[in-house]
Length: 190
Length: 326
Image (cartoon, rainbow over all chains, first blue to last red):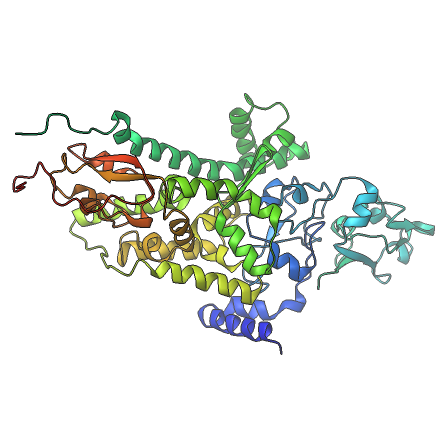
């Protein structure tokens, strides 16, 4: 156990004595599957760079970005995140433009720049849940994808296949008509 | 024989306090309005007025009426002003609180030059005008001063309010401690205990994301602290940003001085001073935020601005006092 983890543990237990529910949630971190905004630095650098000013959320045209309370530990309090099942990122790239600290790097809004500069996660298809793999043609995820035929392509009966160019915007997971969803984003920051 | 020509402060300076309240109100109103503008932009971007709930349509109508005279393309043009007093964007200009720059530097243990530059204008203004942010801009000051007035009402109704005195240097300890905790945890922890940062954020959460967050609890506790323990106690003794601004404004050029010939030692300036300073004995120090409340209340025009890097040395009792003997 390194020093930072140790001190974090102390912080959580201090908070825990004050608000036990929040602390239990903070310790429950593996269950939380979230994305950072497009162009965000790696998790540790991101948390160190973000000053919690909230401008990214305020400029987001889709209200995709939410803000952590205590559910992901003290250090990510008030930092932006995306739950792809609730709202996917539409890749407008405004948050990187407005971020004053470079915690979210500015990325130009064109295909090659986005493919090079954005990596929020990677989509994965659960073939036992996906309707197209069960013989019921669907293909909604393919139609929701902003990088169709680059990040995802469909085979016979609209069966989706994700390539490694997927940047994890979450629009496929958002649009999947299965519940639980058959296509999910696995974040790179975890 | 009385002196023939007494020094008088410029006539508008006793009205600056009203201007200050206008500025504080406008900034607070903007902080409330910006989240609504953001929600309105969401609705405009979605092109789905007919799909909105009746309450959402009402919000849309009000915001459209407010912004329509100024913008033709709200989704794009209303992006001009974003953010809070902690860090904001104004027509492409980014301005940040110096504490944000310092906090980020200690959290990442790196120097982020492009971000430091956004704090340059506030730093220069603070070096000239002292801790003016605390009196003229801070959205928390708006609420804290209303809270002070509320405490005065309580006292008028014979309910005791806190009047403890602590060491004013406590806040420098809070500043250092906050930066050290930021460095250890690797996150800008200091933003969580700095009211102006909290207020902008919490107003956004409340309006756009459907509820206040943990910061509002902290802010409510500071309001109660001011009410029960010490008048304006958080700003005086604990605020880390106030500490940083005080240090930067220690040798400010624009400061208030007492014109001893006009002074009648009525002590109104000391009573009205929110930061518990001592204008009566020429003791302003680095804490003064040039809020001009003392100028506004002075009955004999004995307080004025001066351009000098240090306070005037103690001048003794006022010359219009009944007991003054030259």
